[in-house]
Length: 173
Image (tube, rainbow, N blue to C red; front, top):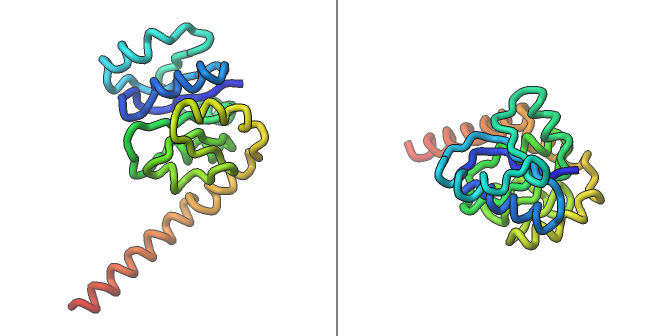
């Protein structure tokens, strides 16, 4: 069992908070991604990488990415600023993996608290939730993605948005 940080290594992505969550919970952390901000990576992430409690995997793609996401106890997504859309959350949930996410931005729209993961206000709260992750039905995460974020569903929502925009334009014009 392991927690997973998956994304760019940048202060706003919260890799340092993922390390704190894993440390507090006493669970291994695997970290995959590209050091986007090298100074941040070198100061706040690299000193914690020991190959055991904290493992750095670099950039992971394709089937290896899916296996990594699907094998995680949870994706730790403790961003430090609101994101418009967290693709990593949807990718993890598509693999049946719940999310421990910061209570801001798209996390609030993507994660169903207590069903597909937990929405957390701090690293301490996220660490407390780790012990509850096994009780979450992994199928619920997959079903959430299928019902809300599938290609078909997204296309339907785009078409609805375009239709509304055209209707508004015709009313104005």
